[in-house]
Image (tube, rainbow over all chains, first blue to last red; front, side):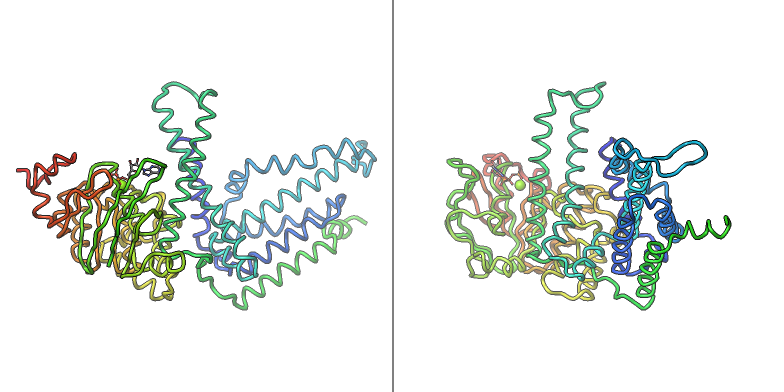
Length: 267
Length: 238
Ligand SMILES: Nc1ncnc2c1ncn2[C@@H]1O[C@H](COP(=O)(O)OP(=O)(O)OP(=O)(O)O)[C@@H](O)[C@H]1O
Ligand SMILES: [Mg+2]
């Protein structure tokens, strides 16, 4: 397998993860979507210095990882490219905000450092939550749930087709890099002189394919709206799950559990 | 069922690909469309499906293709693309197979029933839940044919259905095509398959019809075939 084929394989692995069975996979997509949205909103709403309040929010993803049987390692492996970007967001805070906020022994920790850590943690938590949603719910079920929430059909179809298009483009890239390497033995990567035509070709080829795919859809009666998968109707169990999740998030948001626990032991 | 009247078409200006083409295919007829590479076979199929349009008329069941009736008329036609990679776009074979029936108003139960019937018939039950981009080229071709059969169209157009198939699957496809009651228009370079599946053959060269008649006659005409960059079917060459 060359690099691109590996990428392709990884992409389909997401579908495999989503097709597994577990109590989390068994929940209705709507419940998972709503609880994830609630989680992200609550996580983002924490004050920038409220690191100690935010930390207990880790509990929910950890709980889901346990329950769904999806390895935490897979999550970080798949997110290895976006994670650093998200982490980089708060990197400059320590330079702007130098006022000391608290002291650990003799070391003063500035507000900038705290807000940087808070921002990073928020990023990681949101990514983990989204990953868990994607890894436990097939994409078309997710789209069906979005449609039920009355998100415009155009947007949802766009999302779904984009998701598929990435696969098509990667496939073309795999074929092209393979063809290139077969005719340039011993060369690493693609020579810079070939980049222009390579990129142009890639675009043309994947556009051609996308067009053919689209006409194949049209020939089979696709027009305007997509027939999304029939998702299971929500049961009482799903309702209870959603309410418990949202309740838990609000609790964690309003009560600083870390401080509370600390105050029980330290007087 | 399918009728072309003086159809001409070109992709680029001043380079006509189809020139003043006319023919009629009756209900239930099976016709082989043959010709050298670049003769215009795939283009003819695209014209019939309304994927491209030029001068002249294309009639399906006596109705001319227009923007308004495109959706309805396409429900009567099933098309197996020359390249199956471009045909299968859902994650699994099963999802691809129910796509067409659902779009044409079948209920999920009905679609499921059709999928199972087609898969049983082609002996493809193992493929049902496989990932489309993890199956071999030939398996994908079989799956693509299954996708179209699940739509239960009135006429089936196939672009090179036997390419990429091993002899066993090729035989299955041939037998399946023979058993189908629908109108069939098949392009192929596999003239033995055409001989097995079609009663009539249309020979194209340079976007024009050079011969149209019973398969048994045209496919035995060595001089005619060789004059248009073709050869006798292997079976008849001996
Ligand atoms: N998208 C396109 N743009 C421009 N020219 C095209 C396009 N598609 C096909 N052609 C040209 O039209 C002519 C007929 O092509 P077509 O695909 O119909 O041939 P074919 O008979 O199906 O050949 P094959 O046996 O190789 O499949 C060829 O000369 C080809 O170069
Ligand atoms: Mg062709």
